Image 1 (tube, rainbow, N blue to C red):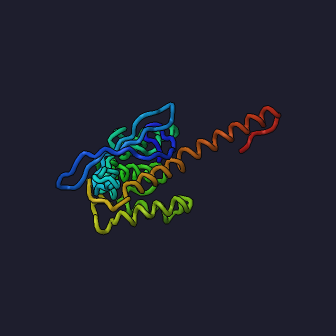
Image 2: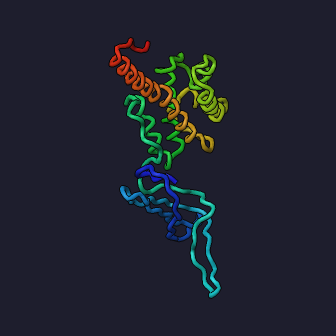
Image 3: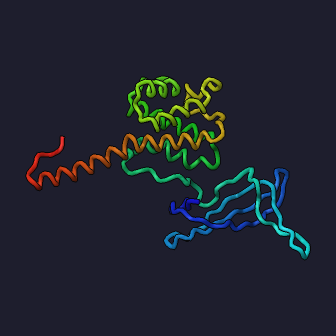
Length: 226
C-alpha cells in the first residue's frame, strides 16, 4: 500500500481493534504504522462489515479482522491518498481537482462532480472544444484526435461509464451532485491526472531538456535547436 502521509510504498499487516456491532454490522479500526522513518505516522481506517474470529483449541474466540469490508473510510490522515498536484499545473486548474481528491473517501458523488468540472475546464481551455455538454465536449475532442490513444481510451471511458443518456443532468450541469457508477469517481481523477501530465508536465519537461541542449550548443558555438 502507499502511505497517504508521505506517499511511500510499503507492505504491512494491519492492526485491528474491534469496536462492536450495531444494526449495520461489525465496526473496527484498521491501523497501519508507516515504516518510513521520516514519516512514522499512523494510517487509520474505520471499517464496517462481517467480523472474522479465530477459535483457538483452548476455547473462546478472538477478533481477527473484518472481511469483506462494506465500508472503509480513511480517518487519518483526513484527506487524499492521491499524488500531489504537479507544480507545473496552474492553480486555476487545481482547485476542483484537489477538492475532488479530499472528498472522495466521504462522498464519491461530490468528488465526481468536482472532477467532471475540472475535466470540462481542461477541455475548454487547453483542448479548445466548443462549450457544450460534457459528453459532447469529450466527443469533439475524440473526433479531432487531440489525445494519444492511451488518453483517448480513458477519456472515452468517462463518457461511457458516466451514462450521460441515463442521467442528462450529468452532461448539462457537471457540478450537480448525482449518483455515480462504481469506480467512476476514481476513474475521473485518473483521467484528470493524465491530462495534467499531457498538457502541463510533459511540455514543461521537454522545454527544460530543450533549453539544456541549446545551452550546450551555445557553449559549443553552434546554432540552437528550432
